[in-house]
Image (cartoon, rainbow, N blue to C red):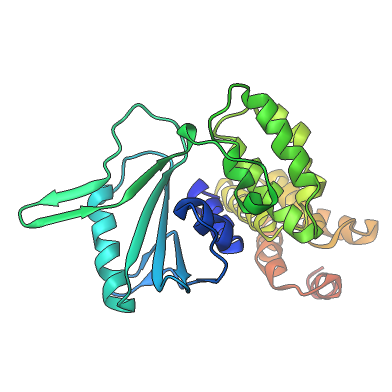
Length: 282
């Protein structure tokens, strides 16, 4: 999953945290808007309606300043579409995740046209690890710190305290992914154990897409062993420990049948659907 999608997920789950941080004042009444704009469908990263202020907060997340079309033109295009659709003032922020020495433009200039937006360089910012900023904790890992590894430990400890568990799982998954931009993989794995993330919708999406990609690669390569391994992993992910009898039947499937099962299992509602498939196809 791309880093901007992880950040978009954070903003959707915690719009108040993002709005209060970016505007520098408490914002309570907010609403996440649909991010698809009219015409060629274009998807903004995050759109937040600030109800008391009667305005829209538009947030874009970038790992680098490079963009097609160029970032300034894209921000102007978004502003025009948003203003035309909602007829409200639009405040725009570009949050750059990964440190760079490249110049990051904050305006679009052309004859008779001048459009400005705010650029936030995370590596220049600091964040208090407070309840008010709980939705920003994964982003804090990319912010300024004299001791980045200590910051990683502090964020991990704070995240492990969050309730309910579903919210904790989502935030830890997002932190796990974003930490990859800055920290060693083994250190990340030690602080953010996989079992803590398993209930996260974001984690499930990452795993499913990764397994689907592996299945596709196995199908293209035509390797029976690779296909069998990926199908068994996906079945375990969906249903937990597989009964030995069912596993044995899967292990006897040929290449074509494994392909069929790899496609069918995404439609299974529970393990009984899987067993019914085996009964019909083995």
